[in-house]
Amino acid sequence: RWYRNLSEPDKTIVRDLVANRQLTFVNGGWSMHDEACPHFIDMIDNMAVGHEYLQQEFGTTPAVGWQLDPFGHSATQASLISAEIGFHSIFFGRIDYQDMERRKIAKETNFLWATSHANADSAVFTGLSGSNQGFVGPYAPPQGFH
Image 1 (cartoon, rainbow, N blue to C red):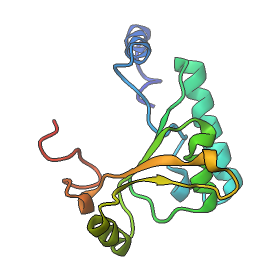
Image 2 (image 1 turned 45 degrees about the vertical axis):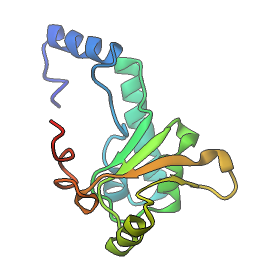
Image 3 (image 1 turned 90 degrees about the horizontal axis):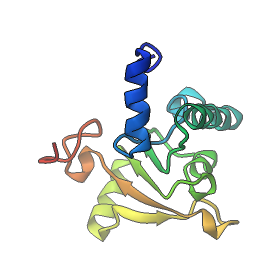
Image 4 (image 1 turned 120 degrees about the horizontal axis):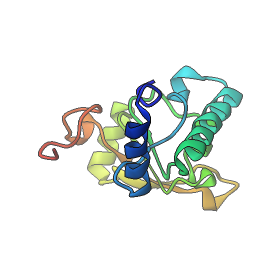
């Protein structure tokens, strides 16, 4: 809605920022599909609609996935945020607290997620970026990063 309500000169400024890589899009789905679209067909359509819009309007599609506040990751979710759709990395704002504790101890808060056993090329760099990781919270940048 924000972009649609801009004047044409302001839309041109935004398009220029995107073209100059001063503004980029992350994830690019129409919504955060794991919560808004629980069925796998809806998840696929959600990403397709968002990416198609960004490609038509700005000539770009996201290369980084991000889930602000997910509640689980299905097999479809893993495929949608993998290298199979062009993502080179994905970041999560929240994971299970027990998994997080294990990853902190093992120093595995950044890892290569093998999203498909059938396709080794689908692996994607994954990072954890929420309050459990020492940040202000899943809705804010790391402390000191402003």
